Length: 410
View 1 (cartoon, rainbow, N blue to C red):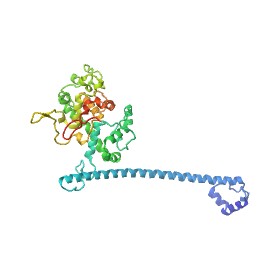
View 2: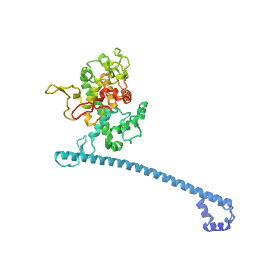
View 3: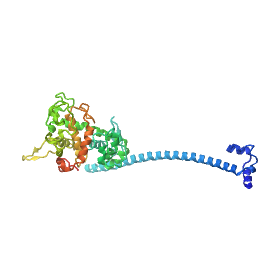
View 4: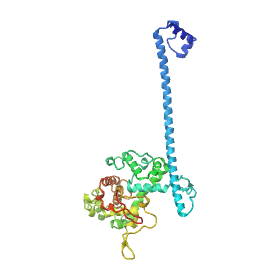
């Protein structure tokens, strides 16, 4: 013990220096010579030094944790940038193969990289990004899957594919739009080709173009159904124009017979499953959706108005199906192989809206208070749980090149 005290005495040059370094209250003139220290005082000194070391370690740990957090942020940003670069590279490769194929078809060379026109008329390089194709994907999703993405479509895009099945019946037990977003995002991933998945997850121009196409599909669909109402519903087309003054749609019995079973009373409630879903306006659960006007709406959306104009005869007087001319229809542009439950449900709410007194196609009708968004969900749920045999008209053989035949249900 005495040897230890002597060593400590050699290490500390003076009592004052030791007081300044450790500021320990027991190092006063009353403590006496160092060789008179007791084991208790040695233990106290050791505990004080240990406490100081713990404080230093805690501070070092705090600094390290902050640095780890900063590095994690840097890593996340680098991963996002890498995903965008990979998506751009993929599109460059796809566009290069497409241009090479077109050049071979013309007997020329592939040429330089294509540029894209901005809204102000200027040109900008987009690394092979095909804005028109992404808008088509948005239009397709609006027609065959979900006409509205609530509360806002941006919340379902720029997301990784969630670990849920888009066709899980559980989605229809959820009423809050925000809670439904994982299933909506999963459905977008299901219908968008895998070549675009990286862009879907992180590329801002993809989000903007997809939303634009999705929004435009609603106005295009309403315009198509209204302009072909005479062939679809056997009514005057000017009855269903926007802000029509020819009739009062809220009180016209011919229109109300499509929308409510008690059509003699204009103030009665609109039926959620209205007469327009049943043949002859007679409620028959076994025949729900098996009506010609829904088939015609689907054909107009997929193949254009000419697809419901009937048949024409050839030089021998035989009936033959009309062939499309001009640009390919949506079914071809979208690569659609099957009629989806979403498309049939969409046709049903389009028919309801066009025949109603509502002027704007919104999730809830302003005049009728019809909840189109909720009706679409109920119809889609019903159709997703219904066998193909129930919807006989959806089993028309697949479209062949040049024909306007309906794709079949999966």
